[in-house]
Amino acid sequence: MKNNYCFWFVTGSQNLYGPSVLEEVHNNSKAIVEHFNNNMQSEYKIICKDTVKTKEEIYKLAKEANYDESCAGIITWMHTFSPSKMWINGLKELNKPVLHLHTQFNKEIPWDKIDMNFMNTNQSAHGDREHGFIHTRMHTGRKVVVGYYENPSVLKEIGKWLRVAVAASLSKHIKVARFGDNMRSVAVTEGDKVEAEIKFGWSVDYFGLGDLVAYVDGVDEDSINKLFKEYQEKYIISKETLDDSEKVDSIRYQLRLEIGIQSFLDEKGYSCYTNTFEDLHGLDQLPGLASQSLMSKGYGFGPEGDWKVAAMTRIMKIMSSNQGTSLMEDYTYHLEDGNETILGAHMLEICPTLAKEKPTIEVHPLGIGGKNPPARMVFDSKTGPAVCASLVDMGGRFRLIILDVEAIELPHKMPNLPVARVLWTPKPNLEVAAKAWIYAGGAHHTVFSYNVDADDLIDFAKMMDIEYIHINENTNIYALEKELMFNDLLWKLK
Ligand code: MN
Image (tube, rainbow, N blue to C red; front, side):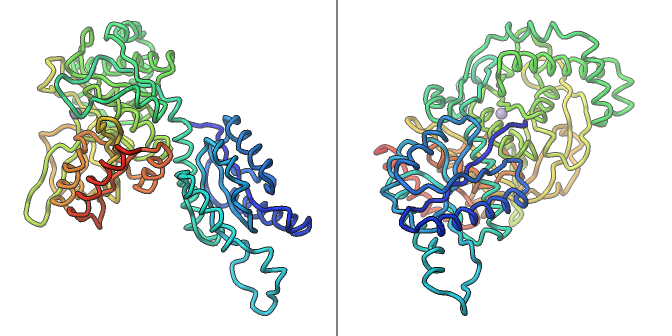
């Protein structure tokens, strides 16, 4: 999942200050960028651009940023005062995400030395307010980060935004292959694919199962043998399973599916796919282990033809560098008084990046779809704070619903449920969270992640200019219902 994206650090000023102040400004900017590159622990490099001082320079910079495919976004900072009318033409042109950093080169006021020269050089407190005004006036959807540039919290917030901006850049290259259509009669997995390409840049294409079957049937035995060996190292396969030739054949068939689907996707440039148990013509099993493995490699996946969740899985895997992120489904509830929890799983396809320990590969009947018993990975998931996200089509617009949750230990073994699973308590509690989720129209399919949080997803929603709803510790149902009502009006006007 490596890429070559970088970010530009742009300091704004004006010629009024004269060359020596501008030189000091530029040196300070270089020092800040150096600090970021050395301490942010981000895989993305920040490049310090020349200080911009005129309308023409800002416009030129915006054009260059737009044209440069490797530039995933711009960080702006007004060390001194940069009159914002100079920024209008450039900001109108700019089509890259912007983070406005509101910081200061000096941490503390130098009480005994401070004079008017110092005051003239260190003016972010009002320079950045001028800059903020023009973004607000122009509705740029930028992110504001506030704090001393060496603060670890500032570095963390910027670092998180960088990966969201990269996901936004890569979004326009996402292609989803749909093997078969959506599950019949299901509403929430549907959506406007044209609007998805306009908003997110996603191409969502249909393929008949026969196109995929040709790839699956063409996989050679040697490739399957090699992958089988790899999986014996990587995962647990019990002796009992290995001694059962039918079960081994079932695993081998999933490896055939994995290699076949991957070759199809790679050859045609797709990073996401969907399938449905209702349309498996020419396949012997529903891809289970195959889809889990492909997700663990970073591919986006959506079951029952859910292309929105496939693309969002991919987006959140980019944001998380493919750590702790999977397709998820709200499956069943535990409604014990005061201890209400949600059991998340799917028929088979949960990504092993969630796993607490080495997953076990097992073969069991599915009880749906009428195909052979499929091999799948079985595991319990890690505990800790996480997020569930659901993208729904409201008719005329997309809404991203984000829920904060806490994943917890499974209190009991579940010997008769051989699937990967997670148990969580939603914020603020199941009653409010489920009510809010249902009022907001959230789906049963979500993307679950330990490594992406609500702030990341809100930043993404702003970059994509879509509606978002965040259900969290402070959610109040009456306020949420009003928010939904006002949003309906707002997005009709937009
Ligand atoms: Mn499902």
